[in-house]
Image (cartoon, rainbow, N blue to C red; front, side, top):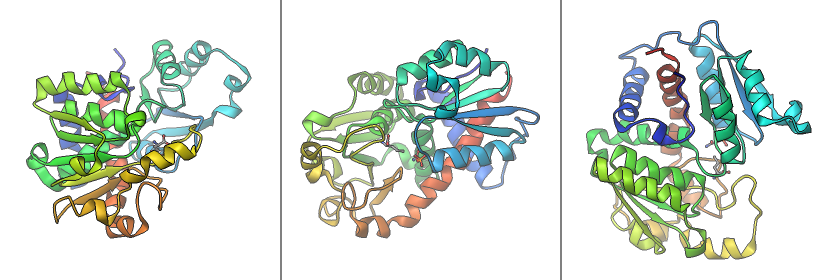
Amino acid sequence: MKRDFIDLWNLDPEEAWYVVKRTKKVKEGEEELDKVLQGKTVALIFTKPSTRTRVSFEVGISELGGNAIFLQESHLQLSRGEDVRDTARTLSRYVSGAIVRNHSHTWLEEFAKWASIPVINALTDKSHPCQVLSDVFTLYERFGEEVKEIKIAYVGDGNNVCNTWLVGAGLFGLNLFVATPEDYGPDSYYLQAGLDLSNFTGGNVYLTTNPVEAVRDAHVVYTDVWVSMGDNEREEKLEALKPFQVNEQLLSHARDDVLVMHCLPAKKGQEITEDVFERFADFIFTQAENRLHAQKTLLDFLFTPR
Ligand code: CP
Ligand code: NVA
């Protein structure tokens, strides 16, 4: 039975922790991953730009012995209206897996339904599971088992990354405070999933419209762009988000040893000030580096027959 990774809940909490903990061992050289993709080709189908996701997956696939082919939607017959079902069924005959970055989450679900190969979500309008899986690894790497005790604040737009963090907090049993403007909150489906999972794992998920409440005494403050790919830059939205900027003033409410995370790309001067970004740049680029380590372990997990 193939394993897809469309949303974080495609892993159960035990599997998700297994991937995160194994990533640490692999990164530290304590364990080595098998060449699980030897002789296999994996397609990357992207309709949106990408620096980190594309490159980290291509490098990871190559390090696991496989071959990656990058397919831009505009070069596929999809751009001329070929059915998602037929595209999925055709590609399944050529390649062993598909990593897809597409705007519509429902389109990706349809693609995965018709594909007979593992399908990985490389970002949709609703979720970005590879990002949050890797971010939880970054926190585990820093805090160890204490990661379940710390306060994590997500501040900004209630977008795909925010949705996924809600699920991530539930899945891994973390304490997450999300602060967004009232009109730009996360998707209620993802919020509910985060709450439901928290009931099993002991996680806590709080929503507020007050950024100071979220950041107060936080160990980690996380943010993402205010204008996601495919969104229009609207003045009223930027105005509503202004109090949610991660700047020194907002951070003064957090712990003195607070860490700031950003999934990147950053729009400095909007969701984060240049000063704050540079103060935490080393951690933020470790966060970016960890995409490679976490995704390699994820690929190993999804492609190892069991
Ligand atoms: N964080 C992230 O997914 O970056 P890219 O858009 O560059 O892939
Ligand atoms: N929310 C951002 C994330 C980029 C990695 C976007 O969708 O553009």
